Image (cartoon, rainbow, N blue to C red; front, side, top):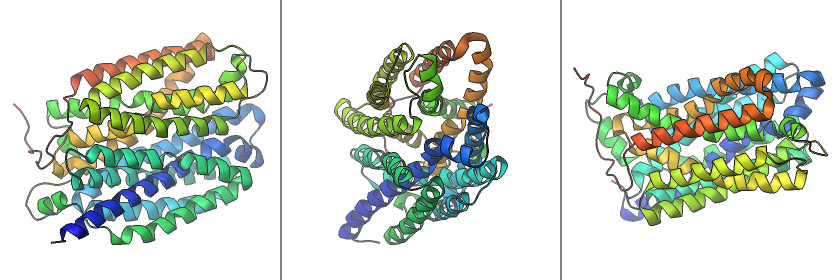
Length: 413
């Protein structure tokens, strides 16, 4: 057994590794949105097809996240959280280096799909380790630090894309991942996982989330409370050039800069949300507040006629603060389920939320020809917020919940 000093050192190193891992994760996750226009133009995509081809490639990345979320989640409960951290970082690092050599939309989409699979494992494994290793009273601070530092990866992505061409920006992301692999060598596995690993309890059984009605709906509600997050980032902000044009912006809005300002806001919002949850001793109340802030700021954005680049950047920052409940959302999911399927849940939930951008984009594109881009954006915003708030009302408060328990593999009559 590690000594108390070793355990404290492990917790500190674990938070550092999980934070930097999420930093690289966000860099690689958003680098495509930042270099979308420039990279697609260089590989020969016509100007009129940039938005549609961009959506296709982004959705392929999200499909990889969906598949990877299931694979890495199951592996996290079966073989350990540490091994998933190693494997996921290795895969997305290799994929991002390969991304620098693509020359056509189909190859581009395939490599982003593989990168998505790799990106799916890092956050869930990191949050699960932090949640299971820290005390129940303080684990919120740990996940807050992971999210706050990790989300700053978008600043690195924007700055790298400014000083390097898009191909080299992908190489930098891959190299950062390989550097991270060396840092994770000194951390231990979760003690709660080690105890379960020695038992005969079923671990990583994904179907346990579907063979019990109560457990299934709890799982679905965990996913649905996060859907407004990726709608805001993946459509409202990523398509800010197109939305800005519809609003009469005097100049084309820079999506890369918009996303960077938004993620600075998200990082700050995660810090606010983390401290507020500790003060209120409730994650549910915090998510309610932040959902309403998001609704207000996004509605203001969609009604801002003639918005300039500078105004959009500051508004994106405010919108980012509103959607800065990511750490609380992932922590709630982690705390809702037992140790034997916790990694499965904590890894699949955020990736299913990211992957929800696929059906969200599909619905959005169905609406646009009939209601115009602004009206369609409003409809989706209010619909997804209503779904999230309903699901939040169905989840129990988990602040300071003891996580030393397992899920029984039983099917209710």
